[in-house]
Image 1 (cartoon, helix red, strand yellow):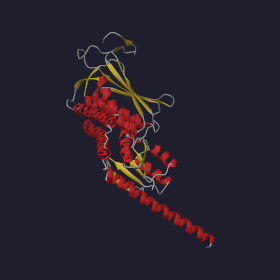
Image 2 (cartoon, rainbow over the protein chains, first blue to last red):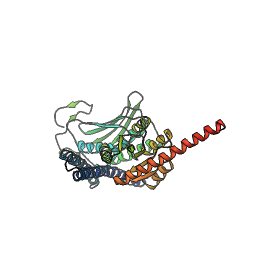
Image 3 (cartoon, rainbow over the protein chains, first blue to last red):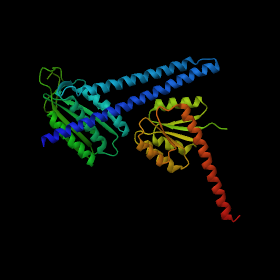
Image 4 (cartoon, rainbow over the protein chains, first blue to last red):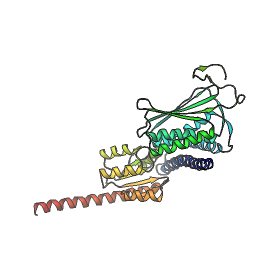
Length: 244
Length: 143
């Protein structure tokens, strides 16, 4: 049974990896297509110089600036894809919670856009350190976002947030819409349960027609000494200013 | 003769606005829409010789937009422009009445020639419809 679950996790991990890479590749292609059109526009402006004997320098400068903006956009996408690709390097490593979540929110922007949903993050200023599989962690949070995206047909806003407690962290993915239990959602919930077992954490979900739904995952923090400047909230949820 | 009128539909704003700019410098009247629903609104207000539609768009995708546009006016000449058109999607688009499925990046001259062909097709379809209409009136009046 355990072996079958591990095989399923590996297969789903591969599917997940492929999906993320394909999405990022699509975004990079968009950037290249824009650069291609802008290069064409630059050639059009230069061709007009031959015909009209005047050069619209200002327009050329504007086009160059637009190309630079697209190059920056492309660089950010490549950086994000590279960081994601490296998250499978080590089965378990020490990583920063906030950085990992920022990356997940960035990777999830495309599926959120396609679902016409605004995906935002509400993160406290300080972070925490986790010791787990960064790949499985990102997969778990993205699966929560996917559930939120598919759980409701009219989902318009999803917020990702986290809280740091003395010994654990809590990541919440909240949507204003109540959860609908479609086969697609149930399948993702089963996948999430397997991932959480692998990560050594817990998952819980709350859904009401008034408050929408919220999926929460809880994980233990990395052992003391990994970093001592984490924000501290006691186990009852009260924020504490001293370091944990 | 009036300029060719084209509607470019793509959620990638910078791409579609640049393409429109390039078409305008070539004498076309190019309008843009950034979603399927925007495209439907534009078509309700203005007549276009051709529509160039992106396949992957948020909310209403290219195929669904194509279907709704063709429902609104079966004579609309719509081509799909996509960076990821598979054979299956291309076949589906053609079944739904697209006149062509082009790969991004498409050469602008090729695109403009397709728009000109689309305009000629539309004129033929409209003329054929008008002839049918006149024949129908003549038949009904017994002339």
